[in-house]
Length: 419
Ligand code: SF4
Ligand code: SF4
Ligand code: SF4
Image 1 (cartoon, rainbow, N blue to C red):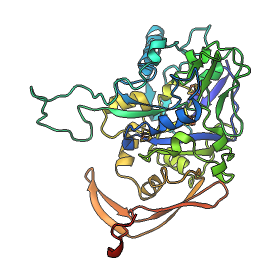
Image 2 (cartoon, helix red, strand yellow):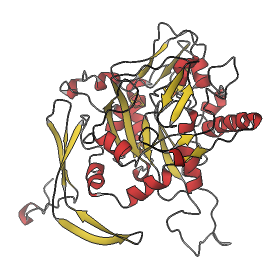
Image 3 (cartoon, protein in one colour):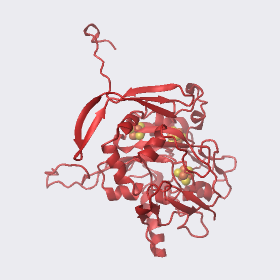
């Protein structure tokens, strides 16, 4: 198998195809700290794409409660177990070496095996086919926390305090990661799955698919799904008509996908980032996603050790145990939480851009405002400025303008009851 470079792992790895990269990549940042678990995103995707016969069980976007929830049930525990068994059989450790961090390896080097490297010779990647029952009850264990450490009556005398709560859960928002090295595409014996050169969106050609379910088996995130009525597999299409600017509302510029655009928690920011020929991200410090992921490193990939280089990034939940988050998001977790907890002046401004316009933002500018707060966070001085952040769309038009401090408008007394 050819070697390809995976910047999230800080090293080359085996993959079935030669290294080729799109011009731009569909990507997003999800701020787990803000998600209210309302499932508006899941409903928007279902109402748009999976409302037909044979698609009843399909949730291309789902939100599960961690640590127990999962759709299909226990998908990540199962794949982590397989990976763990492969490491034990090979006498290896799935460890990271952060000391080797550099510009091309921001989190150091992953010294364990990916799902491709750990697979049996007959397979392209480590995987399993979920049983039909595992796709039922998509929100099993909703809002279920770890065991409650209260007294006999269930009352905690300690309460909960940061940095880690003893009793905890959090919402994990999931859709296809439009991976740089998709395991689904590697697994398909018909080569029916492809990654678009213009935006990195991964699609299944329905005319070529014969329903062998190899993609369902070998996507580690379990985001390819089999449809019994057509006997083909289907998956998230990244709402590509919106990304292409073809949606009637889009005014000809790329728009955020449906699940991103409806989020009332304002946790999602979706866009397209520039990719160089070698697969690295083209430096663009004024692009909000580049800023969050590459400059501030406040958002991290989900299970980077799987080795598919996923393109949905997460700001980890501040209250969850670090060991749990480390196995889920890799070694950048503590740094990401520290930066999110006491954001820099620029980061605080960029965080305002989440879910404020349906148009994808390609560039931001910050107009500096006055100092409005001086305090201490984690024992260090911290200042807040009422800066204004301006987001621009693909045509360079102003799409949104927001201040850090939400403006307060007082309704005139004579119109108190007006709507
Ligand atoms: S998340 Fe799964 S289905 Fe989506 S591109 Fe990656 S491997 Fe393929
Ligand atoms: S990007 Fe579009 S197709 Fe994909 S999960 Fe979101 S709404 Fe569904
Ligand atoms: S719509 Fe937003 S806040 Fe609601 S569950 Fe989805 S990601 Fe969370």
